[in-house]
Length: 167
Image (cartoon, rainbow, N blue to C red; front, side):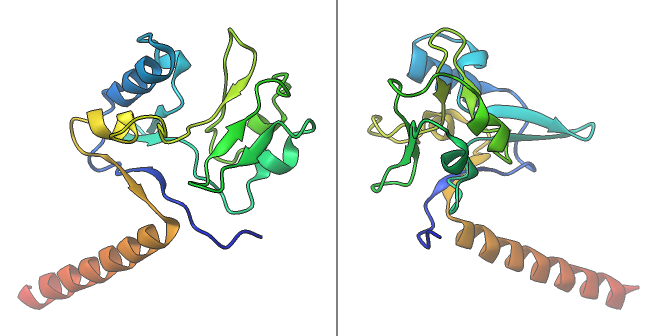
């Protein structure tokens, strides 16, 4: 089991407006085309009004790595991203099925899977984060997310306590 927690892209659904600009920024960066279908990040609607964006979570025990029958996927030691060996990948989709987040896409043209690599070739980092008009996207580790969740719970408890005292 890997103990290193790598940064990955997270979305704050309270800020996401579902504009899909992140998808366009990703597809333009990766394919030079404005085609959200070629993006490595997906905006999804949860419930009638909640929007969020999903991309690779760089799982510690990545099920996609385990599921690949051709050893076409490896983990970058530098930033933890999942690297696709295009010569080995035949688009069988086992990694897509194994991903709990739906973060792996099949390129219809190359017939290879594609996974977010945090725009490692871009000087200013992930373009989806850079172009998000509401700052809904950011880079964080799972530990940072856990700390934020604890802070949010404590803040809500204090707000409820203050509300109860004023009644």
